[in-house]
Amino acid sequence: MNQMSEGGAVFEPEAYTVDPKRLEQERGTGVFVRALYNGKMGNFDICNLDRDSLLRWLRSRGGANEWAEQCVLILLGHK
Figure (cartoon, rainbow, N blue to C red):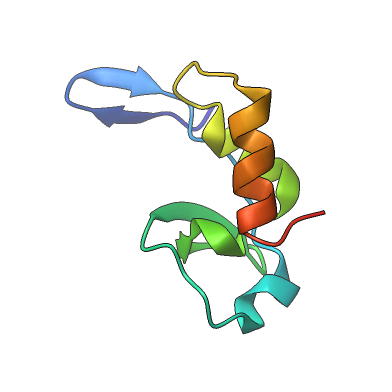
């Protein structure tokens, strides 16, 4: 099991993934997360995440607000 520790708390890292087509975009949010691209972990702007990973990231702190999620998806060009 791959666990990480941060400030004494142990957590399971989310397996966010990058959509390769979204790397070509010039826009960015300035919000970076750790995500997989071509089998390697790296730092990527949330606008580079695939739709499912972006939704998991938006919900990662216990929130679930469908209206806000849909607004973010639209703003970042997801269908």
